[in-house]
Length: 89
Image 1 (cartoon, rainbow, N blue to C red):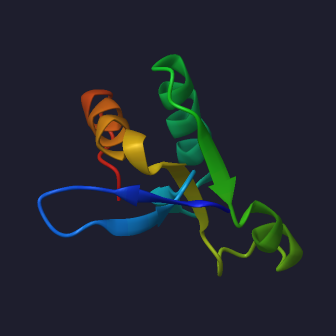
Image 2 (image 1 turned 60 degrees about the vertical axis):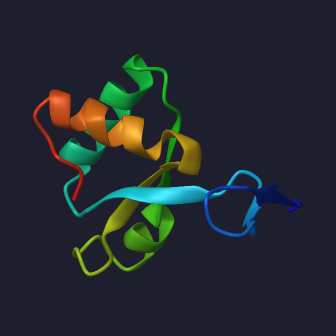
C-alpha cells in the first residue's frame, strides 16, 4: 500500500491509498444486503468485512459483519442510507 499525503487545515498527514471506513456494523444479513443494494444504486462501492469469520464461528451472531466504504465516499454513503430510511450505525 502506497501512502499519499492528504493536505488540510492541519499539518499534512499520511493516509493509505484506498483507505476504507466502517459505515455499518450488524448481525442482520437482510439489513446488510439492503444497505449494499442502496449504495450500489447510488454508485457507491462497498465491501463486507468479517463475513467469513462470522460463518466460521457458526453464525451465532458473536461477530457482526461490517460494511465498509472508501473514506472519500463515507459522508455521501451516510446521507444515502439516511435518505432511504436507515441511519448508519
